[in-house]
Image 1 (cartoon, rainbow, N blue to C red):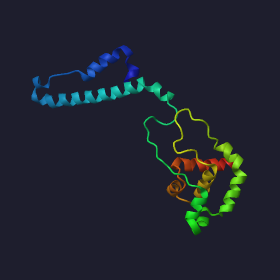
Image 2 (cartoon, one colour; image 1 turned 180 degrees about the vertical axis):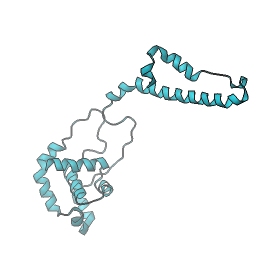
Image 3 (cartoon, one colour; image 1 turned 60 degrees about the vertical axis):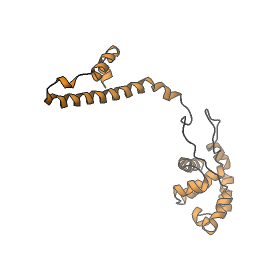
Image 4 (cartoon, rainbow, N blue to C red; image 1 turned 30 degrees about the horizontal axis):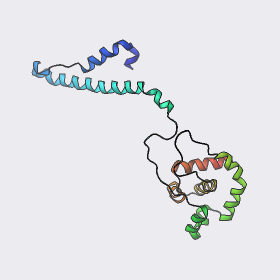
Length: 177
């Protein structure tokens, strides 16, 4: 925007113009409100200018950050085994997954090499996986449950994985098949 029109040397003069002080008490009464509005607009422009300068100055920092954002909070999750989830669901398990447990395990044994290749966990550049890696059988279980019409939030809670991990599992299983 205005930085394209003003050379670098004029930025100081431009900032001075934006924050230039004035004494409204010496002006006629009808001009005081107008001058106060102008001062408020100048201050708003100064804040925007300061934000833009900060973004332009710190733009290179964004490219160097890899991994989780510093200071982000970890959501502790407890991963369950597929057998435990199946026993908790009881008679509803077949309806929820639209298959039997032994069929799911057989499907996992067939797709296991492809799932390992698809969900190959590499060493992270920064930080660790605080909740641990997600086992491939759990990813397959989440994907099958998702394809069977399960709610994404129910799958998150029952499997102990995040929302994006459920979607990644579904896409990964499709790619593996």
